[in-house]
Length: 273
Image 1 (cartoon, rainbow, N blue to C red):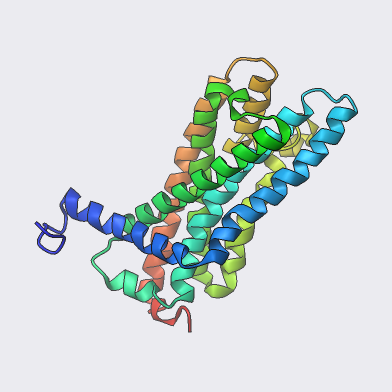
Image 2: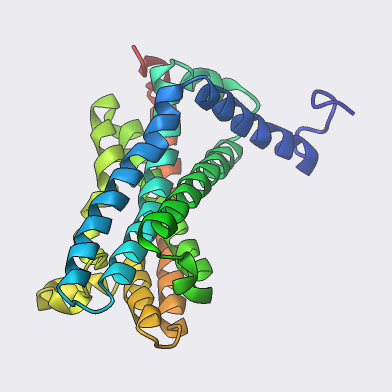
C-alpha cells in the first residue's frame, strides 16, 4: 500500500507523515551550508573558550576544573540545542511562508511536533558527537567521565529543552513574528538558575528555592557529584523527571491553546507576510 492509500489514522500513515517532516527538514538543511555551519560553530566556540578557561584553572591547581567545566559545556549544549532547534524549525516554516501549507495538510499537530522533535534530536546528536570528539582530542576529556548518568542526564535536558521550545513556538503564535526573539533567548533565562558552571549553593536563598523546581539544576548538580566520585543521585533525577512531565504537559497545552487561537483569528495566513 502506498502512503495515499493507507488509512489516514493508522500508525503506518502517521509514521509516513512524521518521517515526511523529518525528510523535508533534512532536505532543507542539506541545501543550506550556513545552517550546517551554525549547528557546529557556536558549540565549538563555547567548547574552546571554556576549555581554555578550565586549562587555566587546572594550571592554578583548582581540582576537577577541566572535568567539571567541559562536562557542563557538553550537557548545556544538549539543553540549548534541544530548545533552539525545535523553535528554529518552526520559524523556518514561517520564513519560507510554508506554515499555512503545513496546517491545511493531512499532517496533525502531534505528527508535526513529533517530526520536529525527531529532527532536532538528530541535530543534537550530531553536535554532541563532534563536541565530545573535540573535547577528547584537545583536552583529554572523555564523556565516559560522566559515567552511566550521561543517559538520564541527557534525557532530562532534552525533555526540558523541547518544553522550552514549545513555549517559544506558542509565544510566536500568540504575539506574532516580533516574539521570535523568545525562541533564541528563552533557554538562557534558565541558565543562571541551572548551576551549569557553579554549584547551586552559591545562589542567594530565594534563587536556590527556585532552582529546586528546575530540572536542569538537578542534572548539573548530579553531574558534579558523579564526577567527584559520588553515587548517581537517582532521587534528584526522579524529582527532575516528575517536574519535567509537568512542564512538558503545560508546554503542550500552551502550544495547543496558542495554535487554536491563531486558527480562530485567521492569523496563520498572515505569518511571513
